[in-house]
Image 1 (cartoon, rainbow, N blue to C red):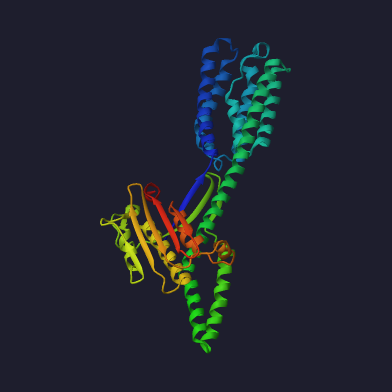
Image 2 (image 1 turned 120 degrees about the horizontal axis):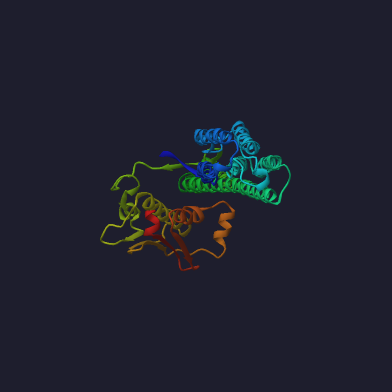
Length: 409
């Protein structure tokens, strides 16, 4: 078995940081162009030129600071907002008529980028704090509240708080999804281990119990102990949890789920390399044929991906184990393999007494998961289905279907 780790990254913040980076560059260029086209009305243009030159250098030099949440520190946020507020306060010094005509401030709409950084980094509360400071600076710059000032301030305030709230909801959703993936991975790992245990240890313990009881004497005591261990192990399989994945928080990538997969690298009899290796299903089913098991197969190879073929063959083995265990040593079984263009169907039929109604549900409650995990669970994991038809007195038929499209994926 070779273990490998799949890393699933989930983040809705990263696109927001990228958009903010582009917004800051574009709005910085807009503020510079706005001054170029209206420079004739500035009484002290050198104030505007000095500030806008600093704004351009600051914006370009701090692009890495708004690349992700980890790089955008609190110290940077304070400095960035200070640059925006300074530009607002300096506007009347460069353009004395700005207070009378409600003209744009020196940073113009670049200021909104500083507020949005607060929203993405800290949520709606941080956004409300930053937008309130911008509102105060705008009122100071205008000298008195005006309708246009109130309109602009309200727009920035509402937009930043809304974005901050959306970011908080997205973060909560990412954590919930990551937890769901963790639980799903743990459940699948538990089912895989339960199948392996059922197909090996539990069946050996059950056989020791039966043989020991039949032999008697000291062997009967050994059989009794094996039966007790079988029951205890079944309870552990049903109730135990296997931590197959773990969730971590990475500020640069959002929620990160690391899922450990186990794959068998010794794919004997397969062809191809890596995940594209295939093998002939017939070669895996051939060992089951015998005096009491008849195997009917196509004349051409039935090629399936190696993991899929092995799981399908294991499900067939589990079905035959159920035949030997419940139908008796004298029961006859038949395996039919059908290779269709869109799916592979394997049918296992026996001439035993059949399964009484409700027996499968009762077996699952007792921890006997041969059908639920070793057969249906295996087929579900490879994208297939397992149908079981049993009539008391007429035997049992298990039909295993694997669609080729899902099997290849």
